[in-house]
Length: 154
Image (cartoon, rainbow, N blue to C red; front, side, top):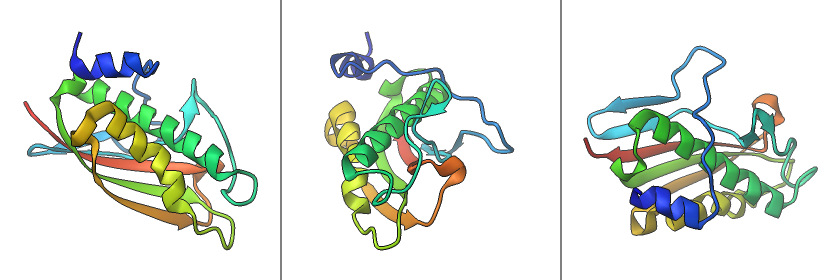
């Protein structure tokens, strides 16, 4: 068993199939040794696990759970594209958008749900640069949307 698959199993994570895009874009794009993932959300079996704004309908802990599930969906896209997550050399950067109520300023705490999982899965190679941006709404009222840039090997 591949190392990253083993870590996922140890964490009790089963990756879903890579989702098919519903609109005009591709889920993953490569240039050189970098892959860029399109924004993913917190769907489980096609349904958002949460909807709404952080600081209004949702707590920071629920936002962290949503960010964690979003990373699981990002990993599914990466595996679908690469075939083997052991091809990931390093997570370079994540960009997180947090659906935020007016006055909510704890986006970094929400995004820790994503960052912590990446470090648990990839170890030191999961440590990354990050932006956590509050936004007034996101598509379908998802609480979190995340993009990843990763370095890969052939």
